[in-house]
Length: 221
Image: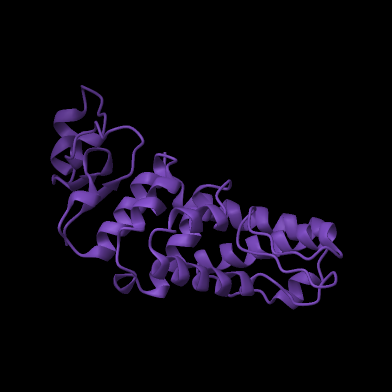
């Protein structure tokens, strides 16, 4: 097994890659304790010093590393503009779905329209992304709630109809957030029907609990 640290940034990695250097031992005890510390170095991939786009490697790996790098730099629109240069045939739907989930959770201001605009130079990839997004949207909506509300995967994704728009938009938004967090955390999916029966306060509390779990698992310094 090879220990590897993948560092997203935003600042460059400036810590020793030797495991024993992570411990600050009291001077008087260091000679006695140091022999008992595991001594090894870990491999390091510092994305602040690495350009995935310039690498000649598996396209899926390049795309994922570039996404992680630009997400940490708050430049996700630049990521999707760069992604347009990649052949749609090299990106399976399941990877597109995971990338959309990751991007929308990393930047709450990002929405589907902005993503599509930045993919417009690659019509095939734009079409595939829209198809995947529609599937994700379908998981977070219930047809007929509040007279035809259709709500989607992130704050900016709203397909709500005019009638019942305000109430439907808000409840649908929380339902979409909850189901997507459950999928991202690999938890059993709550049905739209069951979630629609809950009050807005209950939906918000449920989303906050899931978001807390997401932060504990995935938040970077």
